[in-house]
Amino acid sequence: MSIVIIGSGQAGYAVARELRRLDAGVPLVLLTRDGGESYPKPMLSVALAQGKTPAALVLASAGHMATTLDMQVVTGVEVTAIDRQARCVRTRQGDWPYRALVLATGAEPVAPALSGDGTGEVLAVNDLDSYARFRAQLPAGANVILLGAGLIGCEFACDLLASGHAVTLLDRAAWPAAGLLPQAAGTALLQALQQAGAGWHGNVNVLAVERSGGGLAVVLDDGRRLAGDLVLSAIGLRPRTALAAGAGLPCDHGILTDADGVTADPCIAALGDCAQPPSGWQPYIAPVAPLARRIAARLSGQIPVVAPALPVPVAFKTPLHPVVVQPPLRPGNWSVLDGTSGVEMACTDAAGEVCGFVLTGAHAGKRGVWQGRLRA
Image (cartoon, rainbow, N blue to C red; front, side):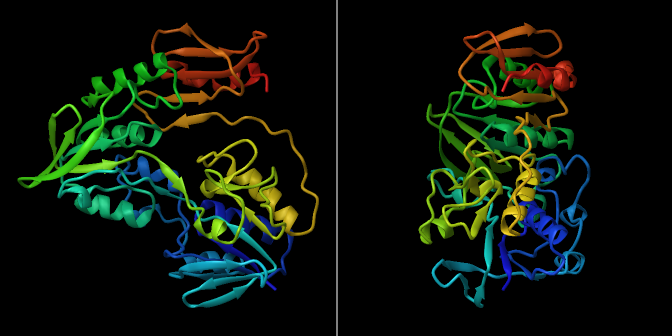
């Protein structure tokens, strides 16, 4: 019986590679609702300035991946349910029995709660197809309004500015990436964006998006109207947990797993943006590869090699002002050590030990030094 993987993103294919490395004979089936192309999703927010079309981002077709990994890749298939008792994945095109199941269903953009006749024209980029739509609707020298100035919003802002577009950032917080960065670091990033020409409106809520002439107008809660050619939403991601929850698997923000990526059902694992291990939901690419190795070992009946779980800092792809942040591993206080040409900040706990750091601008290259100082 096959090991079935749901999802053809980097997490799904990472598990497939590891499973095939451990067992050349195990039948593998990957089900995906899209085209099954292998591509680096983090590139979506930095591809414009590099002149990358959607086709240029593709590393391998579904057919190539199927041949390379000696697996069956089924594209355009919508999974409707998981029958744990029968060990079967239900789809509109038929059922797929499994020996073990891997959920790599990813996350979907949070849809902003807006009124107005332009709401349906608000774009979000989360995969190749949505990136293609974004590229197709983006005119030369466009005035783009970005809803959300988190990590992805800031990356898109840099990419659009570098590509000759005007950008206005809107966020509920007082500074960019407030969920990850302390104020001094967020302010340094904001200053770099503004110096490059970006507009900024913080501490605001967007109420509506309306059609206005040949473009759109964003209505703020203070009554202001901002005109633009295109509105791009980057307010966050929501893990796709419906299949897991429907099958009775415990879910919180994501699908709950143990440290090896295995859910409450020992035959089902989950990883990537849909999963929530004990360390918390981590919508980043860095944790995927080591977890894929552990999942493959568990599902192959092996004991995973337990390596020390080293914290992985988050790097912003913002060339206007590079940022590396290690969110605090425990409660502590932030302090600015150097505020020239960016900021160098440390978070120290009650014992005076370093439990987090932020490096921006010219200090971003000190990542290795600060990782060595970190006390997990």
